[in-house]
Image (cartoon, rainbow, N blue to C red; front, side, top):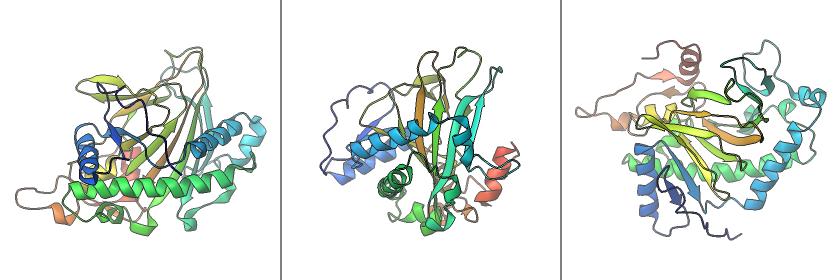
Length: 307
């Protein structure tokens, strides 16, 4: 299917970069992805090849799920006491500093790690849409990681192999931020960097994502046909610090519901996350200690020292 060329590519020249993936000059595209990842750690891609009608269906099934009665949403709830993240969770309380959101988390790839008990059965088309979207985002993520690998002077598959190759995990998270009558009291998501490889994000039309750069916060404005790419901690470490892990947060709106659909490309838990050996030289010593992905996440989530 031919994707309509984006008409909004000049809107955000003063904020995050926009990369047109339909450019026939692959070297120019690669340089743009690398530059954005070095300087910002976040960028939009337009003409990305994922059909807009599929993205529309993704948004539709996500919105329909959160419109269900609480009893139906709780059918896929995170299990009490579970150390894993999968399932439906909610936190809609007027408590200062608390998040104001409800979420649905579940793995979508590889098939060996999928637990369908966390996939909603309602709306009925949910599974079909997510499986189709997974195939498209895998292709996009591998293309982006290929450019980033080339930017390191390595083969295109270097970073995806560094994340675990065929065992790299893809996780769907759907975030629902209802209108918040007290937006100054609560947060959508506090400031953080992502502990994964990269995030591939679509949102609804209500802006709320903000990133920190040059000692100030930037709004990431909504472009209807764009997908946002975030660089996470794992790519920072694998690239030995060449690529930035973007500090970001989400704010809520007093009158409008905001939603986002990030897919997290995440290293296999047993993979060692450290600078790729090919990058380390006498002039470029390792900036990070090797650590397994599961240990890295454990230490980060408990705010323990990693290095």
